[in-house]
Length: 176
Image (tube, rainbow, N blue to C red; front, side):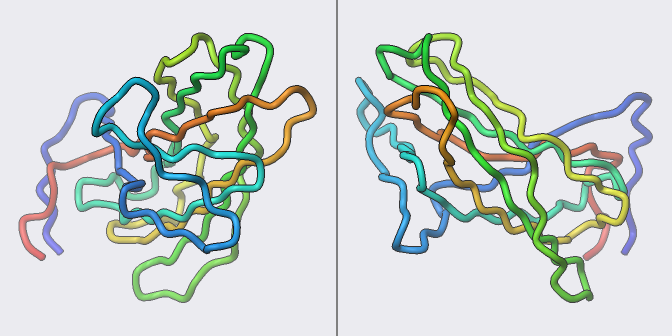
């Protein structure tokens, strides 16, 4: 496969989206797809403890092979007691490399969300996925689940989006 190298002089990053509008549900622990508070035609998944959702990404042709991925959640809460509460998530994933068999499930340490304001979109890091063996077109399957905190739980905790920051070394391939 011919790759067009644009010879970036410094690292260039982009998002690879795990589109939540096409996310899959298992049927026994689903979040609720609902309008955001005070919004019309703006929907998101509201998560309670025990809810989970499944998303998938494919590494694009612009991905710099071997570099790490940085998954993150876009979160929002309209909990009126946001300052004294937290939400906690766990991210599990499986990598299916091109022309390889399915890898083992991996878990990224739990992600604790402490909001800084009510009704504010905030990006919350989910850690790092080591990219040493990752290649263009590898697939990653994710399960995002809300788990219990040791403190007081946030109510009305919305996931607006899920994506991974990737490093790029080209604008894409010249051929397929």
